[in-house]
Amino acid sequence: MGEVPEVPERRGLLRSIWHSIFRGPVVPRDERERRRVVLIHLPLHLRPTQVPEAALRYSRTFGLGGMALVLIGLLMVTGVLLVFVYKPSPEDAHGSLLTLQREVLFGRLVRNVHYWSANFLVVVTCLHLLRVFFTGAFHGARQFNWVIGLLLLLGVLLSNFTGYLLPWDQRSYWAITICASMASYVPIAGPWLQRLVQGGSEIGASTLLNFYAIHTTISPVFILILVGFHSWRIRKAGGVVTPPVVGTPDRVSFVPNLLMREVAVGLGLVAGVLLLSVFASAPLGAPANPGMSPNPAKAPWYFMGFQELLLHFHSLFSVFVLPLAAAVALFLIPYLRYDAEPSGVWFLSAKGRRLAIGAAVFGLVVAPVLVIADEFIFTRESWLPGAASWLRSGVLPVAGLTLATCALAFALKRRFAPTRGEMTQTIFVLLVTAFAVLTMTGVWFRGRGMALTWPRSQPASAVTEIAEAEE
Image (cartoon, rainbow, N blue to C red):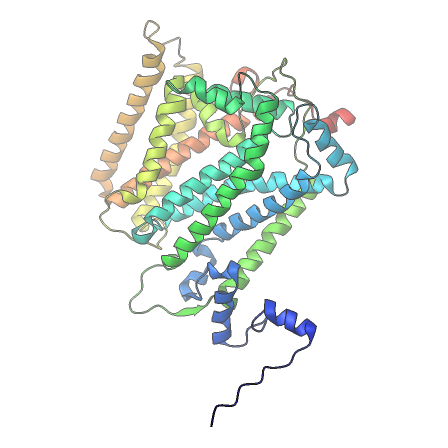
């Protein structure tokens, strides 16, 4: 006798539609269903079904990767809403944002959320990069994922940079002008790069349209592709790095153990961004005026470190040599030879932690001293007045700082006998701290004529805020 065919379960129309979307229970009831939830849902499929129990500790990652993903989501949602009002032309761009803030329901809030999310994304991405470095999460199978992370950081900076011009006010117009002029200092390709950034011989309608197209299409697609690839490689590498243990580490289901923690961090971040957006508005200055430059004219804050370098080094070194050397060094970090490849331990060891703290303190003290000395004592005109500018403010100071760094590394090697990883980490902390000091100096301590001054003593900017004008 043949087998009796199984009679399909009869369902109503609404229940059939629901079952076609959700193939199992919405709330999993046992371990098997928890694993199935991860496998059948696309957003969760990039995550492992199980994670080491040690990875649940918040101090392993501080939720920085998840925060970046939440901020990208906020930028996508608010960006789509802004597109409905914004007009990418020099005649209408500034006015369309005024209309958004004055006449569109919650328009100001939407723009504020977009603005703060974009700035926080730069900070969170940089912190995430530091977390990966300091926990050694770039060894072995994670080497190329470090490179993908650097490309993601470039994508985030590209998105912020192209969005910076869109308000078309004095602040954004002249910030992009500064960045375009910095690109012109690159050897051979400088003039071509400047025309590429400007979309022509000067900043105008074509520049705004190009930046708008890149900001709304190219950079989001670039970031989303890299985020997916980055997350997939993290899963294939075994998830979050944890300190090595003897034997087999205990594992728990991703749902609900890690998922609920990530949701809590994400909701807290959204609440924080919304709260800040209610009380702190995104800046909008007077309409762009190509004939009147504000004093001082500054690059976006995340490029202020490079503008500060221009004040201390020859343009060839501050815009090309030093950034290129830093970029190459960053990309090569996972491929250097190390005595060991510890992963999951903050600062590698107790000695590595002490050396890193010492390097940070040293950088916080020495970098401001060198900035002040270069400003008031070793001015470009005062020493070696007959030498060429590229030698006086380029080769000699860079060679001097390089020799001083090598001497410091040699002294640390003899005094503390650090491993290669600990030494690399110490030099990394020193250079990052110095660049952070340069960035803060440019943002907060440069006044008229880019002269050093206390923030409170700086005169009112030539860029008049719309809110102040209305008062």
